[in-house]
Length: 234
Image (cartoon, rainbow, N blue to C red; front, side, top):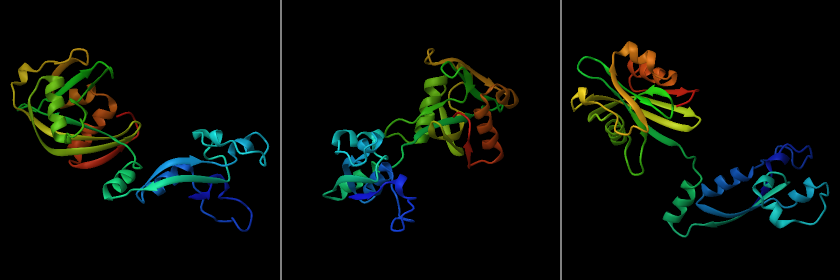
């Protein structure tokens, strides 16, 4: 398939005015959405144009370089449509954005105290939680992380909040939880990751927690089950 490059979409020539232009990545996604796996992308003449000789010879290998794919009048794709539904689905899902999924617990004991941990990598207090493993659901991941980080077995209930951040591109699920094991026995399981585990009252927790985590806790309590886009780190 050959399409007009994005940088030429705003051409002033009458026959190109208003024409749809594609970046190389947009073309890859468009084909993937139709079940086609892209085997090769090419921007014919890009290298010659950048060298100041638009009519010069094609330099095929250079024209296939990722940095030059959007520097030519046209983008050419060689793609193969999947032979069956499984192959077409694989091509489609291969074009979708990748998001990190994480899960945490807002665990409170009978006295209303909040379980918090000190993360040595982040150098901040946070809620027990982490990245959800492959083939693991978020609730199970939150329960696992609470035991791994804080040494506390918990029962996780409803989702109190869903939090999205753009860097890293991440979704965090925060679950309501209560301890199943003795709160007094809480202790770091991995000292190289977690330096301290404590149960603290809500006001103290909000004062200690990293600002974006404190924002999550407030949102969980004021708008349970809501979704919040966070601009800071997550």
